[in-house]
Image (cartoon, rainbow, N blue to C red; front, side):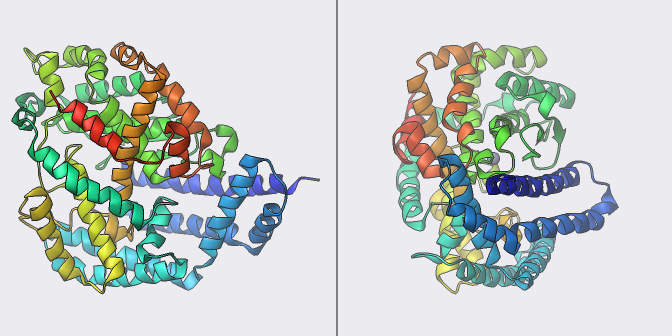
Length: 492
Ligand code: ZN
């Protein structure tokens, strides 16, 4: 007779197979789908999504999970059951009617947002955004929460994080980062001309592949393609895809999106394959996922030692563009700081002010009857106050991000959490591997892989982000590590 844990594992793997089939279709959707095939694909995805939801929320699943939660199981298995039971109880709260209604409101909102952004007119999106806000507030009520309704949404993306903690973090961001940027040496604020020279697309592509291979991304269990927005998607640890984009006039765009997505992909490829479909074989949280991409992109990928290895390689591809650019000038150039209106184009310091603004607005949405048109005004005011930027039009202002039109409220903070976790992880990694810098300079990432495998990858979701951070670094998330990292970096 199969044990009930084995039945649970088989069920979860079946659900994962369906979810990963959806992932393959979504990847294809972004990368190769023919122009007129969208509605067919949307229908196929919706059918599979409903099937997996049905399987997971079936009464029999609930009974299996409740029975198993009463059994005495080893730690990791017990953790899987308690996490799955929590997910089950959450998903059961939504009636099929609500799920249908939500998917309809989102699809209308997304459509309106795309049109509004194209026409640069927030008025097209505003009524849909109001409808969406009404719906997500209902969602928060259905989910239930302590203290602040926004906590219900945060829990969906970063289990365990609450407004109380984020208030402290973003207070630090605005009160410490703003003066830090103001007092920086002006030499960091000059954009170097080499970044916007012309770089051949094919050569950029080849260089990107070399960087990914150098980082340890396994091309036998993945591949890279082109998409308009770079992303990483996993179909299981043995097949993790990345995408990038190439702009001939902006070499940094391709380079650091490759490194960023490479960091996400290494995490997915590094999860425990034996735990396929289970929480212990899945990423801990969005914030921890982002910590992996940011660690590679910034802490490692914008460091002197990283480029000691890769800069000579880069110069072989583009000898004319880097003629006479000394390694130190290159290093300073790739770390230059400038304020602008667009989050995805922000440097690693201003970035968090963009997130702080979204965090404050989202909190406002969940604690007041604010309307879309007032959000736009607040958006523009906050950009002026925190970044000193005048928002010239809606497309470059409140319409710039897709997240709200997808119904994703509570997602943005995970971007900043990722950077702050990354700084803390990097510090702990360097303390455990004293020769880290020397290794990086030789293109040797074995200590990085070893540290990440030991402290992050192998645990999957067994610990939530805060627990994982404490286990890996000795303390829970502390913004001071990020301040130390940037103080050291920008002191010279
Ligand atoms: Zn990312």
